[in-house]
Image 1: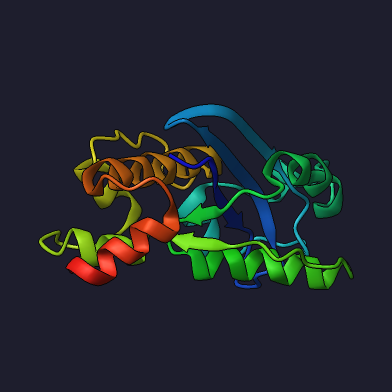
Image 2: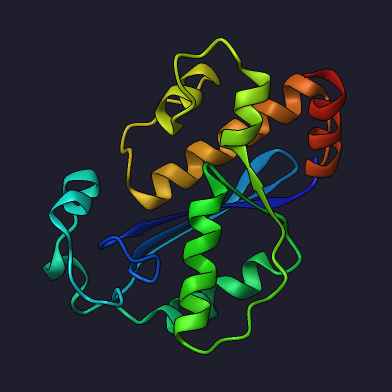
Length: 182
């Protein structure tokens, strides 16, 4: 199985630039090889009631946290060259592009894959394809839903399960398998 990085962002408000927490799981040979989590000072720096209701974070949780570029400087070397996977990747990829743009950073050509989209094809009988539903179906017990590291780990577990179920070894093979068989 190809190595990959599962990624999850939490946001402080409705702005995609307001990433306030990131979780990264590095998978090698079908096993978790490394974990990374950090709080981030969001931009704009305010928390909406709705977002706080989802993840429980408030202004005081991140007021002393580093800005995104400082956090990403720690992450970038770990994920260089790896495919990235997220559950509902348009959200996480959108956040990543938005904060890169906000800080005037050159966006690398990250390749994103989506376990939610794959689940809609592979697990058609599920009541929904939310992270907690799919991870439970795949045998992962998600205990801290909406904690970025826990959500990234659940996403990694889903991806590993999908590789095993389809007997594929890369996201390209997995997408091709799903396209041909579902």
